[in-house]
Image (cartoon, rainbow, N blue to C red; front, side, top):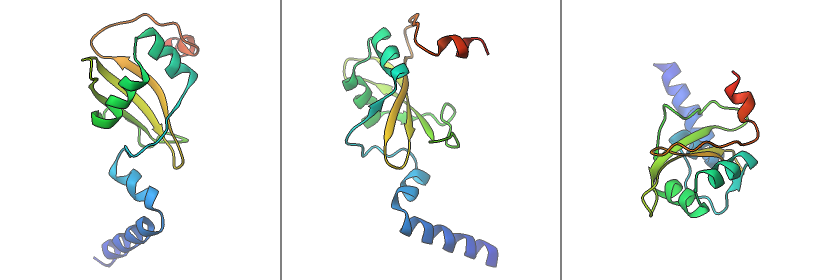
Length: 127
């Protein structure tokens, strides 16, 4: 019982001293003013006809798919958000969320297959 109380106290103390840590523990932080896009994400978005507005739609209202997320990913946890855009595309967007920035890693159309040839695909497909 004492160990449980000590753990809860330490956790509360850490959350108070590091508000970003508290947000990360609760899930994806949607309060982002700007996003960075990886080269891979830009290539996939172009190939799959996904706009920055589409990414914003999913970031705002998509649901976190924890089965496709990796909260222990290094250097930053990755969150897979899924949802529909204003024009009806059903997307999954992978975001890497660090303490000071959020990056769009890649994006998928969940209803249409597109054959994309983006940098890094060959090493992924050879595994």
